[in-house]
Amino acid sequence: MSKLFLIPTPIGNLEDITLRALRLLKEVDMVLAEDTRTTRKLFTHYEISTPLAPFHMHNEHKVLNKWIERIKSGETIALVSDAGTPAISDPGFLLVRECVKNDIEVDCLPGATAFVPALVNSGLPSEKFIFEGFLPAKKGRQTRLKVLAEEERTMIFYESPHRIVKTLSQFMEYFGEERIVSVSREISKMFEETKRGSMKEVKEYFEEKKPKGEFVIIVEGK
Image (cartoon, rainbow, N blue to C red; front, top):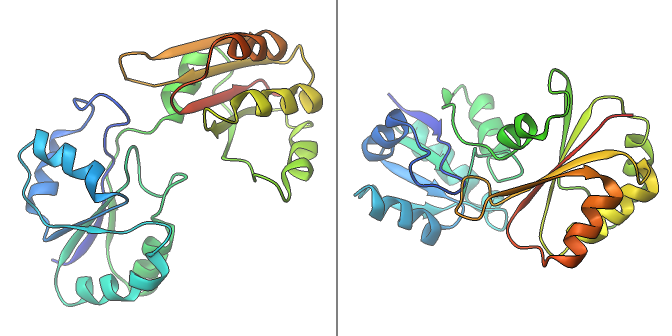
C-alpha cells in the first residue's frame, strides 16, 4: 500500500532509534533525506541499503510533485531529517500537506526530538508550553519578542552556537535578567550539557565558555 512515513532519526546517540523505524527504513521503496550524506552514516551503521534521495529546504518546492506522483503510483516513501522528527524546524510540512490534499496516507512514527528532553530536564513547568523553534533572524524578531515578553507558559527555542550569546542578551532585554532559563546542548551526545539559572548567569557562562553544538533554550513564563 502506498504511503508516506515520517521517521524520526537520532539527534545524537545512534542507539536512539526504534525497532519499527529501522524495519521501515529497510522496507520502504525510497527514503527522502535532508542531507543524504548524514543519513548514509546512519544507514551504514545499521546496514540499510534502501535508495536515498535529497529532500531539503532548497529543493522541496521543485521536487514535491514528483514524489507525490511516485507515491500515488504505488510506492511507499519515508522522509527523514538530519536529526529528530521531520517537519519540526526541518523540511516536511509541504510534503505532508500535499499528501493530505491528495488523500495519501501519512504515518508519523514517535521518536527523537530535541525539545522534549530539554524541556523535561529544565525543571521548569512542562504541563503547558509554547514551542517557538528558531526566532526570525532579523525581520519580525523584535516584534515577536515583545509579544513573548507577556507569555505565561514555558517557552522553547532552538538556537545555533554562533547566536546563543546574542539571543540570551536579547532575552535579558525583553524578559528581564532574573528570568529563569535552562540551556541544553549536544543532547544525547558525549558532551551533553544543561546550564540552568537566571538569564544573566547563563549568558555570562556562555560568554566565558565557547558555545558548541546545537542549543535548546527553555525560558520561564512570565
